[in-house]
Length: 393
Image 1 (cartoon, rainbow, N blue to C red):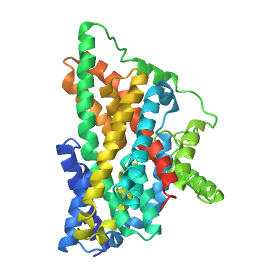
Image 2 (cartoon, one colour; image 1 turned 135 degrees about the vertical axis):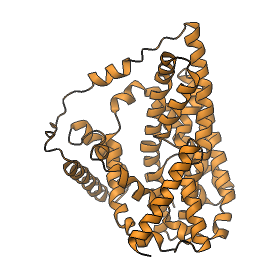
Image 3 (spheres, rainbow, N blue to C red; image 1 turned 90 degrees about the vertical axis):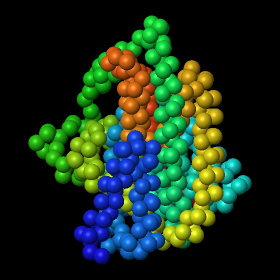
Image 4 (tube, one colour; image 1 turned 180 degrees about the horizontal axis):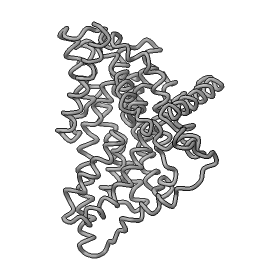
């Protein structure tokens, strides 16, 4: 199959996945839809097993994933973390709890390899999946690489409904307080805080006429190069993607990188699909028997992980005075992250509030917590956990 035909097939499948995800309000994730379509295509012979390789898109994935991690670092606002420090602790502890429970308890029930691969992925996202797939491929264990994809696809089935139900209950609780006059929320505070935070950086920004998309991308690649070099200095004891995230945050705070760098360069639209594609590469070699044999390990990981984040989130949230509904919703962000955290918060606020003021007030209570939680779990903690656990095989 030619490169152009292969790429066309892949992006049509992605587009269908996006449409179904939008129609079901992300309960059926794009990743699940595309996995099912690709598997069906490979098993029936409709798609050649060389589909991904023929597209030539994968040749860029290794570079783009380092750029993506640097970019994620530029989307993290440290001042938001300071304002939501309780949320940071709850979400980080929940993320670690999922990984620890799935690995240490899971291996008592299922194969240790499945527990090890599933642990950081269930508490993370694309980057954690790629990290554990890389570990499995280096160890020549293709079944674990396929399992990584299945865990990634299954987590949203639990995360989205749990978060939606808990936030709906929390929104009703907030609305009752607003109606009773016991809660008043200044919805303009966040905007004022962000405006005040627009301070001078140590490294002056490039003038707009020079700060072109090419210049922005060049700076991102230079930071990615620095991260890979530092990782090699320590003999990859800490995964290079972790360094990319750290240096992304630091260089954005110093002023070298733009906030939301790849978004400002209008590059995320092509970067994300190519990186996402690399998750599915092992599906071409997956057989029905292989996938069928992974159903039980998958269910074990999901059940243990869900129980772990629910219990731990409630306990830690109780210490900080959060309701159990808000605490569980924060913990569930491990299973889907941004932008799902924003989408669900908006949907719940719109459906619960009766006036524009009420909707804004409810959103001001839940949105900042969910936004920070998703960044802490998927973009930071799970990346760190995967970087550590990838050396445990």
